[in-house]
Length: 321
Image (tube, rainbow, N blue to C red; front, side):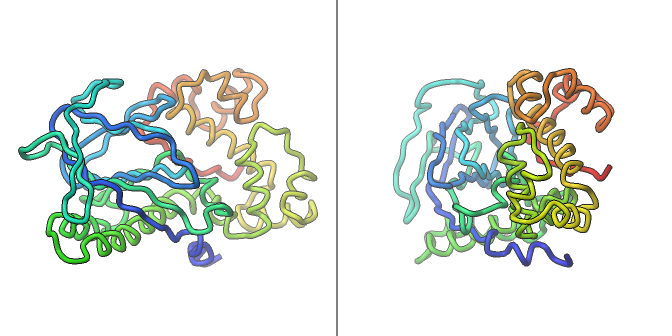
């Protein structure tokens, strides 16, 4: 398929809601409860730096000016100053007031050490959005420097900041529309960076193959057989095998094996669960079975991968075998 993203355009649309402008001094923390109704929190860092701690544990995710973080599954989390200890409690002197059409949260009357635009979004067709199933718990994309996934992200970030600071008529409406474009580009940048390499995006763009993929993602521990996957795809075994070979160059069960290992690698970097628990969650009967398969695929053991895991993991590509 020449452009899988074009076929998925309706699923990439987002409806943002700008909730707060945050300006904080050195010590601060802001807890965010889990979102319901398919809402996904986002944090746009416009100045300074901060950290995100996930409720289930894992390493803190460090964000700097120009970074955009989206939590596609609405996970509970805490955003805090980089100098604030993990788990620190208190109100930190945070107060709320109006800033023109925006709501401002702050704990300082001087130059803030961190400034963020925070809100939430809903994906288009949220109740049937297959992209959501394939997204990791946190997406982080940078708009700055040569490492920016999309050079125009920086321009949109600057324009949003100008609307927030400028007090122009219609600033909230303009900033919301700019945020919509920005967040679509963030998701697109992530999918282009990760999804097209894994084949996940190509499978999602195929209606019947997407049914099998969604079943795998929703219950990776199940002992899937070709018959049951074909039923989820509303097609025959032979047709499903042909679809997968044409789309990702693998059989469905070979793709599932790789997907399980990628899910394990993602969980190792974001979850405090034991290796044995992760093995069970992704469909391996024992820790040793996962360890052997993991070593064959990645050349390291799960424990070694956890020690060297990056702060913000991304679901990577199941490779052809």
